[in-house]
Image (tube, rainbow, N blue to C red; front, side):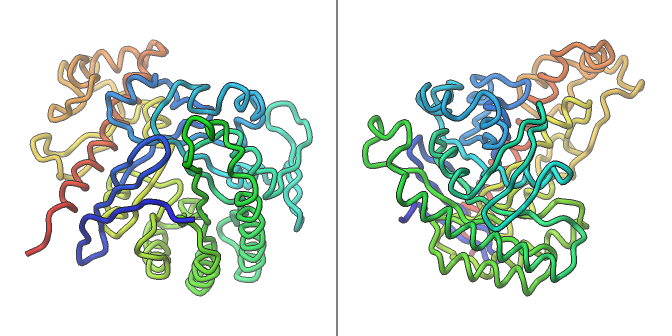
Length: 377
């Protein structure tokens, strides 16, 4: 089933400007998607996200399945209505979270048995169950259930894991095609459906990445994600695997790199031809006092500076985080005040820091989109 994806302009190096049309609205790409793990982008209210022009956010299948439960969210009308967010959303499959529970899981061809990190209770995720949960949540885009291999891993281990991912992708797609009409908002948005993306795996091996991409393209998904990266490998390896995989994915479908990265990295990947990216870094870094700014505030394309607001040097600094930034935090609050909030353990500090970092990421993507919209002479 096709997904409306209109490419407006493409650069020689692969970067493209496009529009992705989803049931809950249109998304301008390339796009950075803030992560709302438990149906909340940590410390940042939904109305603020709207003002920052976040067009699409993520929610996490594993966490919402455990708490408050996908059936409760289904009865509430889906995750959009549950969290009062009317714009597009994406849910991951829970595969990466299960991967992170190395000591609490048991993998078989059927799926993964795992113990909850909350209370130790036993659960089982199969591809079909992941689809059932994601359909109940009702995000615009959902992901196939996959296995993410550790880094480093042998070629043999990676190939075995990749084969499991491909088998699970086929099962995920079959269940989705049979049950996608059960989405909570089906009657409200008649004729519109969730989209299911395949996930390319293959670890850090070029031949396996190529094989994985080709196998998934044969399955004909509406879009494709590149998974299993930013798990400890050097940045140059991440870039190499992304570049190689992009060569083997359809140019007329959206391409999503999962779980990356720092601001300069997402800019680089967008210019390579990646359409969608997400990362917990803006809010996680903000909660720990790490802020992003431009080396030259008057030049929004200048190098990224990482600022540790905990440092004593900011105790009496009355300037904003970034004098060229127009976010609500920079317009109103000083570095000295933000340092005071952090030192005092005040929750407001985490909120203001997260707002700035999210704005910085979203502004970066907006500037990249503008650059990509200009045709080359």
